[in-house]
Image (cartoon, rainbow, N blue to C red):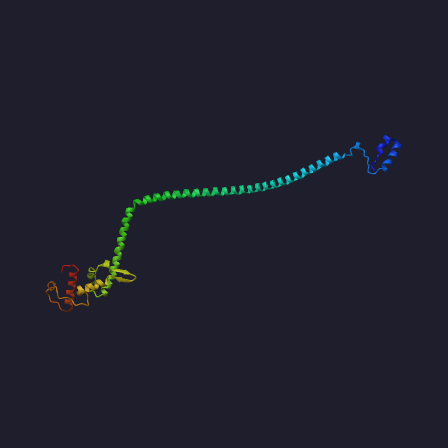
Length: 244
């Protein structure tokens, strides 16, 4: 039972004592002193409870909103960090790109200078083109001459081996341009020698000397090998185009 001492000055001792006895016999009734604010009417209490629930609901909603905002802030911070790292990397890449561009510009400048110098060199070389072609022609002609001399030397040996009485004279009767040498084999000579042996057999040592041309032979007597050699030489010179 609540403390009801606050009623004693109002009721007096006798009435207060009688009142306590009656209250003790009436369970379910509670007296309170509302003057100190400790007693709250049910309607007010219900209102306060409803307000508290509403407040708690708002707090819960705000808590959820705060959690959402915290998550968004965290995401934004991560994006900011990534953007910062990307910006730093891009700045480094831009610096490298600038260095590469500067390097390439230097190379282009150098190549441009080389191209200009090359152009000047080509223009200068153009004035010597005719002279260079002339000298190349001379060199080519000398090469052909050297090759002909070498070919004639090889042919001279081959003519001597074929039995020619005078290889130098017989050489003038050979068409050198028809004689070719490839892979160590000579073509175009054998058929010419065969034709000459058939038409002018006296040019070769294995064929008897002809008896023609006696008018050109000196009148002093010759006999034996000397006469034959003299007659063959004269016939060779005549065949080569010499006047005898």
